[in-house]
Length: 422
Image (cartoon, rainbow, N blue to C red; front, side, top):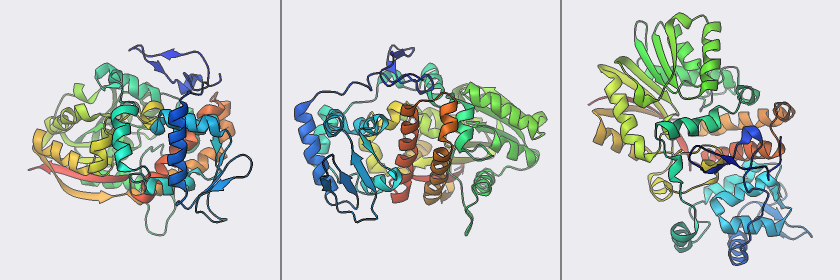
């Protein structure tokens, strides 16, 4: 793999894009220069950290933070680079600094958890408003989820490599929140329990024709077919489609499952049930009305929808939905996490559907991510053998830790929702 300063990769819109699967990291090797912003960022960072239960250690031995000896330690290796990156874009620079090793931590999820718990108050509100208006980057219009844009956005994450995802996912290849039974830490059982629960919310049973929007690697389609249903499942990821078809055949249900490489907006037909697990987050605010209207259009009159969605508080969603963050730049381009209120509003305004049952799995997602993080770290050599460089590995570590922290403190949640017509 090439290093962070590798030649630029240009997307179909002309944007310079990170291409993690090819070791391409546009601009990452160059530390931005913004002395005034760096000084402000350092002052704000020191102010924020002094009350958090963490320890931040600088070269020379300076320590700040309110953490004790068992608290997570953040070691700032290159303070000048760290504060310049933070000053030129706090929502992106903090993660980029971890990717290049400006700071290191052996327990990143534990470190990020107290930051996540006070995310809305770490920076004074007036400075947040000023930063959002004048300093923070806005989502590039080129990453909007048009038909072509959605395919490109999905390709940049889900087509990285099936072998990569297999290194840290369990045998079900489920890439969404599990639902653990009381007293159990069995991830495979928890993933199957989650899938069965969302199928139950859609009322899936023998003889039905079920539409799945967002195939993943095929486990939900297999379990629906094992109930005796006929399944049409759609994805925009060619890598996922290929492996899903193999897994469906291996499960002996290929005669009951059809995998389509197709956008939800191109779906036709009428189905007894529609199921979609953690796909709405990739739709984008602009297309939420279209997505929910499609659920309504494709569902037969007496049918039900089983929907699983990551969510965030409505007030935070409203103020951050147009922000360009580290996650949107490197992990999920074009993605926006909705609130439950936003889902309800779109259902009310654009469909005849309503939520009739709901279940929160937020703490379960934190546990799921902890499983993935441990497995990824234990198999890091295998990831490297696939051709992914050190920058990628650090990026993926930060991604999993960042998400786990959000679910730990409730800044993020995930809901299973059963929808039916009003």
